[in-house]
Image (cartoon, rainbow, N blue to C red; front, side):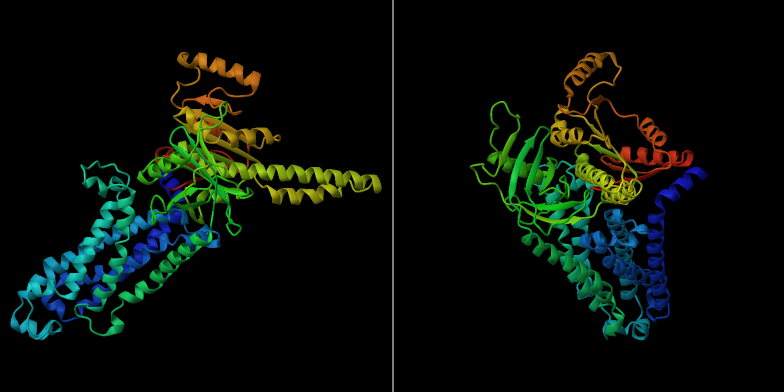
Length: 577
């Protein structure tokens, strides 16, 4: 138990201190309001109901302000590059956003429940003497239950609860990911569209919240009505981000250079790169297609390298928006020339006009920090390989640059030797710091696990390019096909034999069609990490994973185990969708 606890603390210390601070602030605000209202005359009539309602209201104001900060993506992207990124888990921003939403639900139940089921009944059942002495805030005449409900405070409160309930329910994974199948026409309330549009009800919620805060029960002095004080900075920051995104997306004009539709329902879009668009490998950007929806923006990992003169994304058909996007491009794509690839393709020479695209970004992601590690272990499941393709290409570009610098330094050293004959020791010293600065990462291992053989077509060009140009063996790639029996199994022995012969003769794998050898079944991750630990002693290895949560837990646990028993340091990072 102590080992598990230690592992949990080491793995989650950033989350723990942030959540602890957040919970302490909420407890402090609740207690402050609780004690404050205990001194008021209303306590004599409403008792602890009003104390709980007002305490919950204070935490609600705080959380309604705080919930906007994790979705200020430009601010988060900037903050993660500062020293604050060492102590705050900015990669968990969406998880924190969801956690705050859960706290808001609890706060609403406490606040509205105490008012409707406890405060109001005690108020309308109070004696004339109690009302005249302690509850003159409600007017000379004692109000009825309906008077309290239909007042500005009651109406705004009820409308807020309705809007928030709709947005919260449609944001759950059962509705957002179409896991609940409803009959027509109710099927329209499931899927990403319903989630996206219902979330904009919060514009109405914040307007109602400010009105609700102006017409507070029992508070009449303006500077004690603090709702607007909580909301001012976060709302202005979030509004500023939305305005920035609106103008920036119009400023980043892009034109489509190439479109390809691959097996497995994957659409590749290659577009021109705006001069002002600067990004790091591993980051993502938002894409909008006005022909599909003039309002929806969807995030996709950038698969081109920063050194490329174009931008590219790989989009898998998973939801209603991606299905419509694929259908739209299928209509303009033309069959390839006979004898070429069997994929549907389109480029600038295509007769039919290509749909317009808008982009916004780039935004930070865990994989962008790969440069600070000596060795990389990149693990992608299916379309989860996309963040790492850009990293492989960026590493490849750096390898080419490094070799060019080494050749140049060698030529310079030879010339210097011919002229002086005494600079043999100084030349390497000039090259070494430059080489280290250019590429700190000495090795990268890429493991791509997929169920479909056709998936290997998605990044065939990149893999062949890496295999051809990486003469120094910096990048090692492994493809795993899980729909075929494990290697050594009698049922796959023939495939393995033919595969090995063809790879030895032609240098091409018959399964993937690339120079990268394909293995069958799932990798034995313990063996993979053991091999890396032995090969790279005392190295700092960054383990980056993108895919299903189940494997993330296994890899995280293995990293901790190897950190305890070896001198190699594994640091695990999971990409969040």
